[in-house]
Length: 257
Image (cartoon, rainbow, N blue to C red; front, side, top):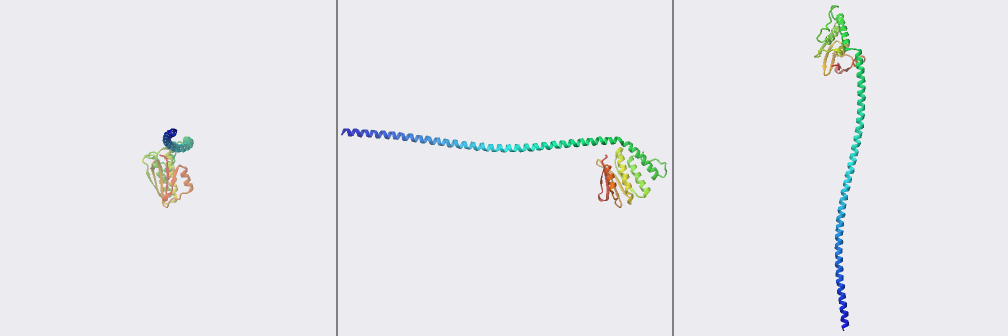
């Protein structure tokens, strides 16, 4: 009987020990599971943060790429603008050099044909015309030299000569507030002479001479309208005039003021 009790006690002790050990193992397993779950949660959080950082980095990289492309485009545009500016500068320099050459040539030509001397000769020529074709005596004094505006007086002589010689009356309207001198006087008088002479094929008309901004404009209106030949047009344009024939009015603009 006693041995059976001893065996039973041993079995009970073993069972109790097993239960305790099993309970301890189960507790440790649960603790490990909890620890692993916590670790997993931490890893998931870290993974989410890593993904967020990766997304932010990708967005920054996309922005940087777009900025780099924009900067590259602006750099290309700036280079194109620089090349265009260099081309324009070279073109302007070439035009300036050409203008200097023309100015030098014009100055040289002006030295060959001094305006004051030409006007003095024109005064004498107009004086002879007045004495021979307008004045009743051959020894009369020319009205040009002592006139308040010699250029106006010279143009009027040509108009009077047209009336006396051909009967074609060209009335002169002079709207120039200050006397013309030098090259301006020579050019305006000679163009006016040509217009009055061209009116010979008409029944007469009106010649208006006026200052328009920085130029003197001569406008001839005749009845019937003056036929402007290519020869006349070429001569007027060669004199530096801008010619208009609108509405039967022949206008010549001379930039001499």
